[in-house]
Length: 443
Ligand SMILES: [Fe+2]
Image (cartoon, rainbow, N blue to C red; front, side, top):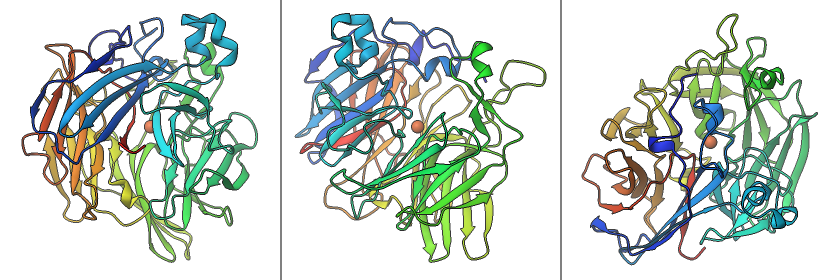
């Protein structure tokens, strides 16, 4: 795995929490774009990352950033570390016993009236739109002990499909909640070994699990790695397809690979499932006879077509573009869709540029980001009331190396090659992070 300088530039931690109001804007923020963009990512409580490997980046302490847009203005920016046990251990030991032992640094979910900061499998943390910590999840009792950071919400029923990949047997738990957060399905799924499942997919009728070639090997801890992950040649990669109700789990073998993120999935017909992902042919693979990882190739968009009648899977690369952190119009989650947005990766240590890929025509639009700068994942926000898939805006945080500050760039979802609709100038950096969510103003 290639190293990144985590303690300078785009990834470097910020050392304090601030509240800023009335941010300068270039261009015109759409009047109907009202809400808060919340970003999540690692920001060490002690101010510095302990190394420069991706496995030094992933497990650090959760910090949330919120940029509020209202009535055509960028009304505020604030950042807060999540108030967890590990935050209290550094900043307020007296509060430590009362706080949740989790590190929700991966994603943000708004569901059943609750905003949750999500961790890699640990307990979710309820927060407010102002980024204040509330504590354990209150509206999702079946998920309070742990869940993936990438559950999926059905945009039509409001149901939430989730899982927890555990280090202990039976290694996988599948949970569905209704639109109010109450569990309707909660089952254990037996696996032969623990698997690094970061994401999942849904269709209108099924959920899909990814049991791939990256798994847990606890000897990696004694080799100096902070997370016990590595590629396993001896593990068969497979897709698990289950009725959303929890019935009839079937596994389908695929070529060896690792998938961090799903783009989308849908039922093409009653017996055909389409799954689009960002796929790596190798990841966390130890070089022969060594304790160091080989450089990871770039991830590319990839399609699996699963024939449930014949029990077969066909797979193919969708496009020759190196991308990660894919997003879609979430109104199309689990349904046929046409547009994929993602961060471009010119190299495997950069997120630089934004891609809009049209799956129908195979065409690419690019929002270019200059060398030295870096950008976040692009979050698509649908125009209120519109049912046109790409009618909306793409919200992208861009780190500017020359000024060591970040901009929020608002792009036209239909044409990201146009000049930005608006750019919000922050006087400081939002460090490179993982995922975020748009919270509409009535959250
Ligand atoms: Fe992720």
